[in-house]
Length: 449
Image 1 (cartoon, rainbow, N blue to C red):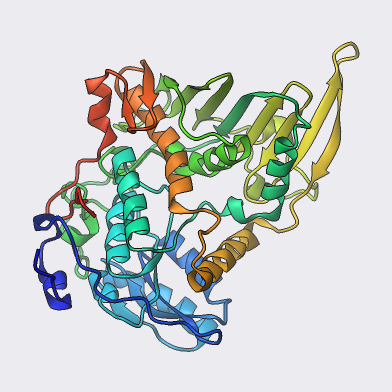
Image 2 (image 1 turned 60 degrees about the vertical axis):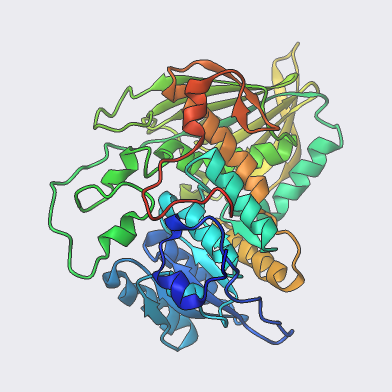
């Protein structure tokens, strides 16, 4: 293929090409040089990331990008308050990719843009911080990994609890064998949600590039709000979009990659609002002799998230922790809290039915500061070119578990066997159909990245 220049890249259809030329090599960074960033998507999560980034003196936010021009003002104010300059605004993210001064792209859009945005940024020679959930499908996630490796890019995923210091200490404790043989792990997301409101169809607001906003997902009639959260072509589901944090942590703690089998149970039991994804989900994974369980519901008001607790205790109230992880071994059980929850190990005497905490590791950083640590790691890796804490391949393996649970649900809650070497199901063509997302032309993830 004849190499394309920057102008052709910006104007051309990505769906018409199978390979791309890196547009600009990484610039050489000196020790005193600030990392130049562009951010794609400045809704609620994007603005939260900006709030963290502007506390840093080692970055410069050159671009703010959003398909909706109305999003620029609030995001620009955050930058101006923290850094006292006004970043440029672009509606089309490809204009950031053609700028050789830009070192890295922050992708804080909704799910549908994560895979293609990351791949295109890697092809343009940019490092990437991409929010969770990583991908809409297992196939898309693998292509993200391939792009990161081919173009030698740092790709950090926003599962920030991997950067919490207490996470490494918990993994070291388990690996030391002090829990005994770990045979069971449980991952919870038991909390209260609500119905997904679906507004009436309205004209596309002035200043919104709705075609670009929809991107790889179907271009359905415009409605305000988060109506798209109920559709597979836009979203992995509220449960898995949030649960990925503790799924990623659990996989890190138990040191497993692909399961042998997956079997989901559950459905839409509470919120009959037209959603395609379940509001109740219980999934069993078999990793040889270790069983991993997902337990999730969106109708549990008596459960709490650690980030919302107001008391002064060092640890969550474990029985009512909505987002806990339990690692069960033959000698003890670890309760682990995401986003600043710390962890405790319990041992007990069956004859007295008493248990006691034998090891405790409270969080040394609050929830809000853990994302700062995650950015510390990302910026350091941009400079030293090492793999980050939440490297794209590690989180791909984690989100794959979420996709597997959803696929089992979509084929009637059947038990499925999975081949991790090929990332396909064993003898199940129906399940294989859901390994790849349905992307709208021209915004198609290419076979050859």
